[in-house]
Length: 91
Length: 417
Ligand SMILES: Cc1cc2nc3c(=O)[nH]c(=O)nc-3n(C[C@H](O)[C@H](O)[C@H](O)COP(=O)(O)OP(=O)(O)OC[C@H]3O[C@@H](n4cnc5c(N)ncnc54)[C@H](O)[C@@H]3O)c2cc1C
Ligand SMILES: [Zn+2]
Image (cartoon, rainbow over all chains, first blue to last red; front, side):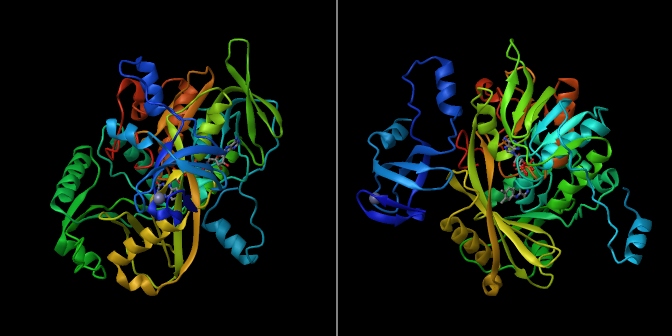
């Protein structure tokens, strides 16, 4: 599996770190317990096309949103993931 | 059929051409008291204990492929009970004790080999953590020995002790740990369960659940038709989220790939199971002589049952750091298996919020050693409708209540467990 970084071009997988499903949105401060539990622990765990956050630590250090098929490892899109890294830093 | 020295002699005299099939390949009946989804080690062990221990014999195991085609046949065969947290310690020791009598119980040679499991340590902090874990084990009546450098050198003189970056300082040894022949474990449970009347049904994929007006599960839809069930137990390893989804459940689980590797056969070298604590590398030698080894999961969601090269490179580097002489040994085979990675790295054995549906999941990459214990406690849950005391902490709601069993201390990051 290789990822085509929009900033660096095609690079080998070892340069990237995986953060997980890009879909869940961090609940606002003071959100109900159920919402927080859902966000932290429950997963769709999609078998098929999934959009996910990857970090290009071995290259431009940008956060990327990668659209990938979890059944085949086929990658159909890579774009900058605005805010994905910020969410991690805020935590 | 029963195996004995006499059956062996009889078959030998006729050139080993008279062996019978060891279990029946059944066709589905309309209804069973208990239907188990998943014909891996856990599903088959559950069926065997339901029949042998809890007297429930009208049981079917439904497997979408062939039995043992999942992780049961893909793992690196390590068994041990060196866990330190309440919940895990007792459970894995229960399982270890069942391994020790498995061959007698099942009348099948599953080649359980208690050759010892040693976890090497490379720093003072790691030594202290292992000392503490070993003490916890001993307090609970489980064998553990903390070895210093001299003792490790005596046991495994071939290790690279001059490695400047991660010098080996010692290890935590569990002598009762070891390996078992994974396919034979599956066949043994199938043989014994089938002998007590359990139906093992292959090429039978569960595609949905049958629910009554109150939402209770009363059966399953399969690729071979509808099958009624008093209770349904799921033991589908890496497919838990997909099967649970058919009942409208979302789980605290992600599916990830773990790879395993086997080298060409060499003369006896590694006397035990050994883990390199500085990287993540573990190795043992099969009875045929191949080195069987593995390391970390690939670390991203996958259902592809195959891995990628960076982890292969990382695993081989771990092996080379520990035993540089294996650099001349050729890699023979590599494969991947899909596992449930739970959010705290520990299993879930519980009733689900859906009446009639029971869950056995989240084994991460350590569930082979759990096979007999998991079958025993899951059978208890299905038969009695209450958790077995040794599995009482493997609750599905522990993430909500905060009662997690986080042996590796990695939090809710399944790709790190
Ligand atoms: C490479 C690798 C190395 C490992 N090494 C070790 C080790 O050394 N020690 C250790 O303790 N653990 C190890 N494990 C983990 C261990 O193999 C698993 O945790 C354990 O085997 C899971 O339980 P199981 O055997 O029942 O699962 P499986 O054998 O995967 O059984 C689940 C079955 O369910 C079936 N199924 C799925 N969906 C459906 C459906 N809809 N209908 C019908 N059937 C279905 C599958 O086909 C499969 O056969 C390793 C795993 C891997 C992948
Ligand atoms: Zn980049």
